[in-house]
Amino acid sequence: MAKTLKQSMPDKTKRRWILAASILILAAIAAIIAFFPSRDGIPFQRLQSRQTETDAKHFSWQPEGSILNFIQGDQRRRFWDVLSNRLHFFALSGESRTITWSPEIRGLRRFYTYVSVEPFDRNGLTAVHLGLQRGKNTIPLEKQDIRGRGNLFVIKDMKLRAGDKIALVVKGKGIVTFTHPILYRKVVTRQRKLVILIGLDTLRQDCIGLEINGASITPNLDRFIKDSVVFSHTYAQSSWTLASFMNLFTGRNETRLAMNRHTRLPKNIPSLTEFISNRYVTVSLNGGGYVHSNFGFSRGFDHYRPLSQLSHRGAADSGQTLFQLALGFMRRTEFPNLFLFLHTYQIHQPYEPPAEFLRRIRPGSRFKSLKTPRGPETFRPESDPERASAYKDLYYAEILAFDHYFGEFVAELKRRGLYDQAMLVFMSDHGEEFFEHHGWEHGHGLYEEQIRVPLMIKFPDNRHAGRTIASPAAVVDIMPTILAACDISLPESLADKLDGLDLMSKASENASPRTLLSSVSLCRMLEKIPPRFSLIRGRYKVIVNYDFPQESLDYFTPLPPVTGGIELYDLEADPGESLNLAQKRPDLVRSFMPRIVELRRHLSSAFAGLAQPESSDLDPELKKRLETLGYL
Image 1 (cartoon, rainbow, N blue to C red):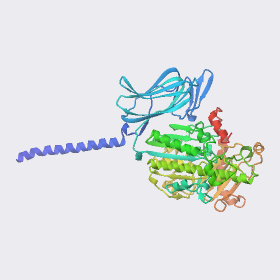
Image 2 (tube, rainbow, N blue to C red):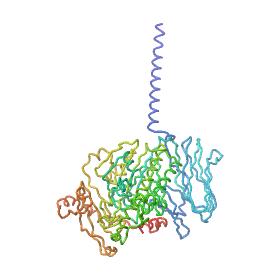
Image 3 (tube, rainbow, N blue to C red):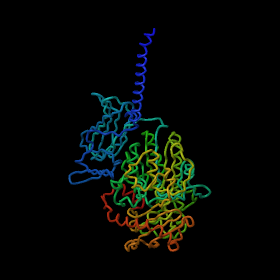
Image 4 (cartoon, one colour):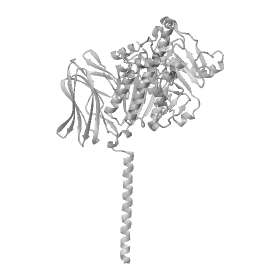
């Protein structure tokens, strides 16, 4: 028996070693899987084909502005319906074109792309087929026809096996474009990740919670505040749309964008969307105009859609249209990770609110639609007191209408179970002046009514809900704050190139008091207005004005108010900025001077190096929208 026992002990030890080794191997495999997940675990994938989907012989392509020109001999023809700079394009002359992809993932997936067609014959028919090539067989999945100029979503569920190829076949005569296809897993609602950035053009901060006739004109935003972090002292870095939204998407001040209203965002300046697109499908529905892809806003977007019904006035319910389209898009696509930028000119002039909301502000008003003076008459006083009052009434009614549509949007997100896990950012790009400083509208000044804006952020699971942060915040802070919330790190090379910071970081909470910059300098809406910039530090604000050249003074009727080189205001004692303290407090002016001198030196160099317009070939639809909004 002793002999048997001696023989068995080595066998038991061997088994123990084998068991221990097996456990270690399994643990190693688990670690590898954890750090290097299989493609089946990726929520979405942008498909790339080995074929050439672009036709360089017949097209010129400027992806930075999503500008596509079709070349026929010596003639160039612009293709207008370009919704992404992630684009494939070709021309057909009656034959069919097949593009195939060999996905590396298996199982149930959804395929998405957006196809646009401009036929050579106005009523030409273009056929679009989607199929699955399996061995020698082709399984048809979807067939749609486009008659004349048009576009369509191609969205289809498919079950993929090893060796399958996805085939898109297009037949017809004309120009065809389609966005890079996306293949993705549908996930249960609670697992979907949503970041929704809502930009309401032209909303003043002091309109949030404003009571008229005994009721707030923003009741739904007031409720949204309870779920959000409110940044009560937020400043736009410019007082008009193009510059301010560029500040948002780049995290940089207008003085460092190296662009004007005739050019587009330089290639070497990255945008928020380019960073977030590694984790999220990126989509925008917007009012175009000065957020058009022409200026570089579409960079990094899978789908960037300027819509006339969100900017052409006469669509008094454009906010409602925006949210309905967004909800429809989300329901149809069901992307697992989605970054959605929504923008509307609902409250931008000309003011023409729906009648039901105007009645709640001013029953019996004889004015149903108005435009404030602008251009050469920007500084013309209104001689009719009733009309002067009606401008604000109509503006407030527009806000009330938008707030109602926003409330419907939030309610629907809640009904679908999407609200709790979503990050919702609500902001405005600039405010609006109603002659408080002897001017109308925006884009020409840097007083509080033009640059102080609302900013509210609802984080997933209502984290930080109910907080109000009174320390200064800026539109340039939105980019780093969103990226940090999504756990997306910026390259170290960008650390000293951003003017914005993560508003929720410990570092920002403990940082020394900031000096915020706002300006209309390199990128000006009204180029007859000379450059100016403002610095805000604590309770004090300084505005530095460049001199009006004679040709600018000749442009305006009546003349603009000339305030001198430097203005200084105490925003706590004088929130209306009516008392210029520059002469009385030279000590305070001197404290700002190092930064003023630095900025003036920088602008002098930047103006000299500013690129000339890359193209005067304005999209006719863009031109029409700018004219409708009063910009041209």
